[in-house]
Length: 118
Image 1: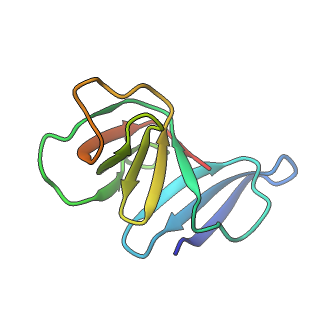
Image 2: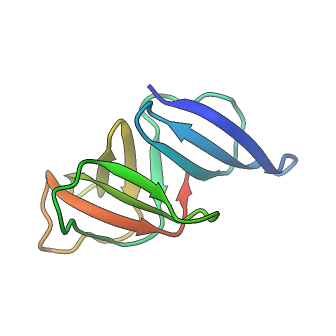
């Protein structure tokens, strides 16, 4: 189950917000536009705006925020190469980029993204 931990409005009239989300194991700061509610459906897919590479280790799933920016580093599993779906814990991400040819379904991947969007 996804939980909204915090909403910080960037521009409430324009429905732009920074939204902190958790799946009880991982926490991620997202840019949300338009943001209209206080809850997320459990099948929410987050947008990653960067590239995907094969994981260099067998680390467990994790999300690490880089400083005070929107940038995050993620380790997870590529569930569907064609749909570019990556799962990190209970969070599902859609990569807004191509997946390198040497990475297949169910392989561990890592992503450093400039921003995660809802």
